[in-house]
Length: 308
Ligand SMILES: [Zn+2]
Image (tube, rainbow, N blue to C red; front, side):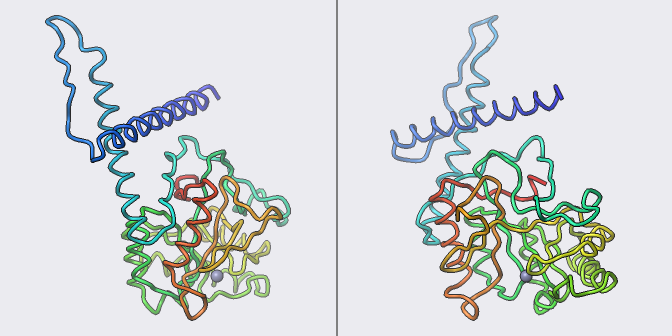
């Protein structure tokens, strides 16, 4: 308990330091109107004296420079991709991962021994998580855009769509995106027997392992529909958690699960690999739309895997 508190305390200190550094760099950038220069202020200690202050100040300084450079890159990328505002930077990954529990009303019989089902990650940070499902649209611009903007997301893939082009999702993975399980054929799982559900879920575990070398830990049932057999089957083939979603992004609007039609800290946002055939827009249009909502409401997009 004591250890947990200390870790939280030091995480808070690090974050405050980062905020202070960011504030410093903003002032410097405004004052000079240009990028920050190289090393400076090397304090030569008088003979026999220890240089008590200089090293930490320098360390903070170069950290601030890196933050400043990262922010400048985000501003430029946001302009390039036509975003209304620059996305906010996510806070550091939590030192202590939140304990995940199944959302009230989403439990099945025997839930406590099955993977948790949730729509929001418990956190006080103003972060949300982006998840993209299915795999129909394979737009190379999406890969470039998300890398350029440094926006993390998690993919939930269904083999009947992915198998048209396994290489596209390989490129996605090589850009740091985790590929997770959305079944082989996107069936309505509660209509299937335990064995048939197991083939759908465990079969997709095998496909992802074979093509991408990594066995998923996350599973999302098609349409968000599942029963006890789905969770039992998922657990039996190595699934640790079942993230659903609190809101859904489209190319031209948002849809909300909650009555307040708003974002909340830790909300998981669902969207799909879709294009003009299904949507009033492209994948980049969807990113512009969802990021306008997220940034206007003061949220940053964080990496789901950092919180699990
Ligand atoms: Zn789906």
